[in-house]
Length: 173
Image (cartoon, rainbow, N blue to C red; front, side, top):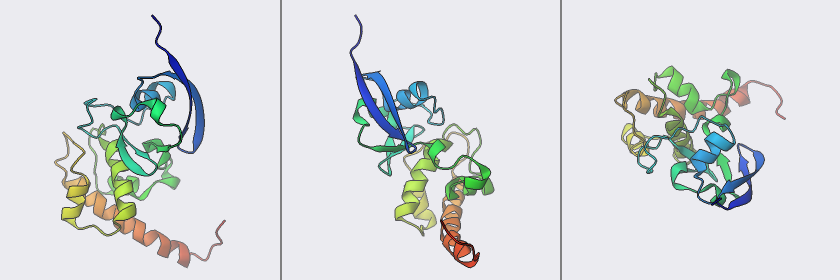
């Protein structure tokens, strides 16, 4: 028996994708297998570890808990959509590099998307607030110290960016 499929149009990282998917296809599987965006990692498949976190309309969401057929009408941002070149890195990506906030890298995409959303609403966190912000994401390797440093550094970078742009004297598009 063939499973019924549904035609969907999903906006991921600003691009609209048209696909036909089974009704029970998880968003994480859709991103990884249908769109070949493998930055979203799947760890526990129960929404516990946070490795599959993406942004849905700017809010962190465990993509292993959402069906792809629920995604149309929403803007999905994966780690690939945060910035994918050294010249276009998001402040959180830059801070993770500067602060050595990753080791094996498996959990990193989930941390990057979670922290990006958090800092948008909390631009000047304390160390305790940074720890709380990342408490839903699990990492087996780092011990979290450098990840917390990266959250605080990313906040600094984000706060410095507008000042640097306004003093550069360049015209904006």
